[in-house]
Amino acid sequence: MNEIDPVDRLARLARGARAPSVDVADAVMRRIAARPAARPAWALWPLVVGVSFAAAATLVLAAWSYMALEEPAVELLGAVREALL
Image (cartoon, rainbow, N blue to C red; front, side, top):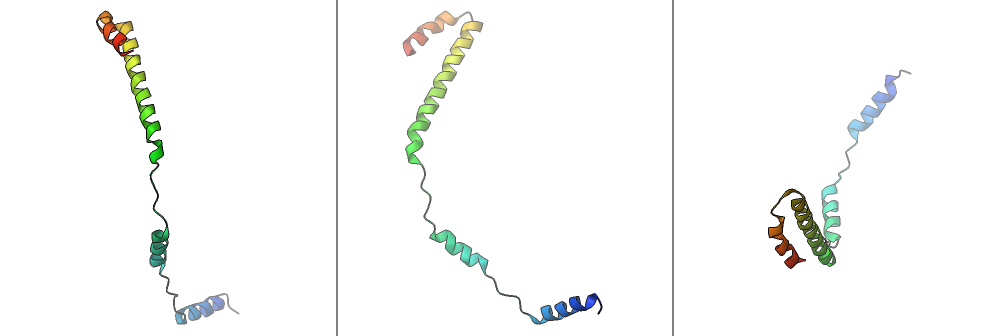
């Protein structure tokens, strides 16, 4: 028996066999359509607004602190700072 004989036999079998028809796209589309749509997390909006406001306030205070160290005209902005705080 030659080493190539089993390969030839498998090749003859493969030539006579038909490839199975596989339609994956339709099954995937049906599966996607069957899932419920995801809802956005609207409950987190107040948290997002609060954190954004805190970040903006922190940046303003940091800018005022930096200006107090670097700029001699800080006394002009002191009244604005007192009014906002």
